Image (tube, rainbow, N blue to C red; front, side, top):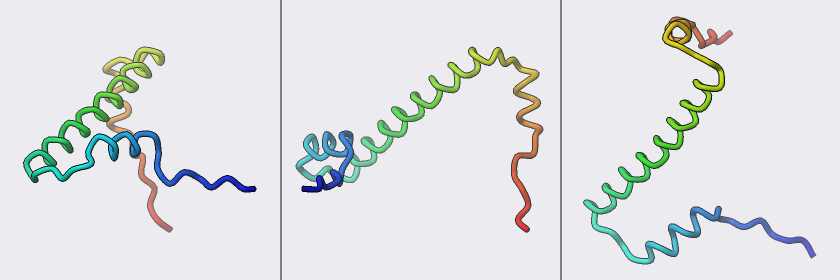
Length: 74
């Protein structure tokens, strides 16, 4: 018997269990803001870790800011 893939992640399931009722638009906006801040903090923590591990400094940041990273489409 093949096992079916679970349609939701553990995070999605937890949110579904937590919010079994509708939120007002104001509360929904607040929730989105909190989630955005949560993921922004995770990203910043990871960026700080890489910064420290790579020994980057302001000079490296200027180099990255002045590097053209996009390629032209052919």
